[in-house]
Amino acid sequence: MPEPASIRGHRAGQTGFTLLGAGVILALAVTLGHARQEVFYIPAYGVVIAAGAFVLAAIGLALSWRSRRYGVATLTMLAVALGMLGVLAIFSIGVLLLAGSLVLFFVVAAKLPAGPNRIQAAAGGVLLGLGLPALALMSLSPPLVNCQSGSSGENIFLGFESDSAAASASLSADGRTETGRAQGDTYEYAYRCRDGKLARFDLRRR
Image 1 (tube, helix red, strand yellow):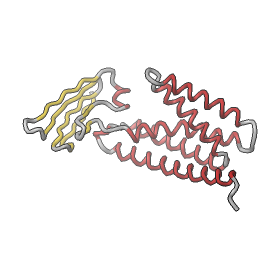
Image 2 (tube, rainbow, N blue to C red; image 1 turned 135 degrees about the horizontal axis):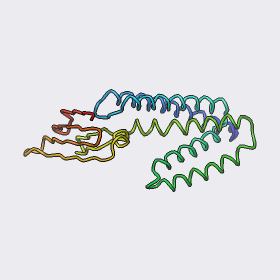
Image 3 (cartoon, rainbow, N blue to C red; image 1 turned 180 degrees about the horizontal axis):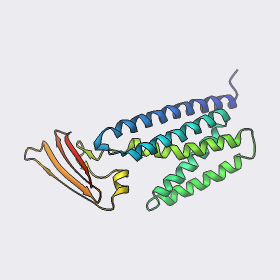
Image 4 (cartoon, helix red, strand yellow; image 1 turned 120 degrees about the vertical axis):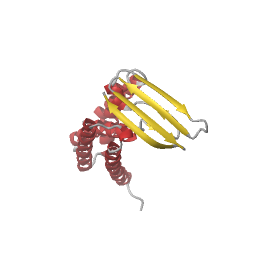
């Protein structure tokens, strides 16, 4: 006899949130690993933000798991996450993200009146939606210098701390060595790439 759809849905929710929990742990581990590498520039307050986001996400996962209302938790998480990303990207696609967030909030509101543990599930989704975007942005943030692509610039932290930026680079005659420099109001760094790998990186704060 085939399993009822409700049981299949519950198992799918359990699996999805288990994978989400593993992703949260991985994102924190990657962020902490990057924080030990100067080329990623994650300052002390960035580590504190990552730790706080991890705690929020962990509590959100626990509440969502206990509520067993994975659909409500997921929709709430997506609504809050889209809202946060919409605010951060308000000058580009932020309006569209905020509109999507508003639609999802209406869907969540329609689902809340019925069923047990609905408030617990919604609270879990809110905490996940607050914690996950911060962890994702920091763990996926690229290094300041990418020797393979030949790119350099700012990350979210340097961009927040500095109002202006300028960069320059030069390539050796044989094309194997690239040296460059970038600077902003609060920082300056120099680097050298050799055969597509970072050979030197020096960051100075002003």
